[in-house]
Image (cartoon, rainbow, N blue to C red; front, side, top):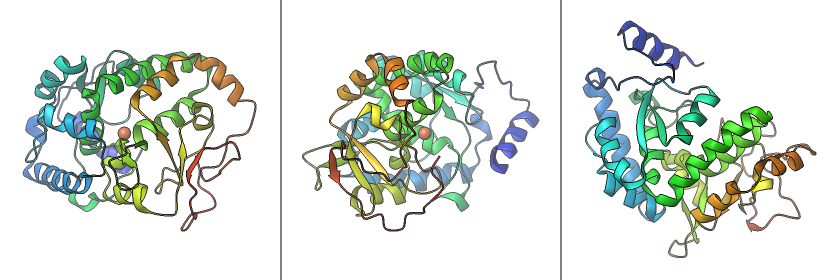
Length: 296
Ligand SMILES: [Fe+2]
């Protein structure tokens, strides 16, 4: 646990905020300072400008539909009031990352856990752990898309099953390469690709890098390939997997994942930058700037 998360947990404890068994709390809205709202404003303005033409249309529709405010941190209950009629999802406040089983249970029940606290101004560009801006601005707009919303719920249900099968790393890779760092084909975009992953959409650096750099690989999404591919948590990605549509994602997790995992477990996971002869390569990366170790 990072020093920042430890500090926030202390703050939460000292403020007497009650944490429920499912790790949720009531969003302590009165605890946000002017500085917190200012960080939200700056990040919101910066990303919204940057994402124009780069992020997929359902994401932009979600921002409009949910009325995400540019000037202040949203009230989670008010946001749920707009999200619920769209797809039946709601937002719940949490202190940060929650245990896997708790996380999957929230998703399986159409509850998306959002970290309540905001990063400081000194961390506008990079934060190791998710904060309110990443969780809310990055993830919540797409929860208003019916197919993506169904994918997220089914992912949670599959996650609960995966806990019992002991194949969590594979489920984590799927989440990483889709929900966090996924690209989607879009003929209207300059290079035919747009962003849908929250880890990209909430990051200035990766919003540009994922679409415009020659360094990373861009490969067509393939479930059995993705669940067996390591990834980077400390830098931008070496490989991005590209989906055709959200329907493709939903169909991927509708199948018997136990069999997919069993098959994948028969070989060593691929390195983050590997390109296989069986891959459908959209763009092979130059590998410029890659570190040799550090895949997780
Ligand atoms: Fe995330």
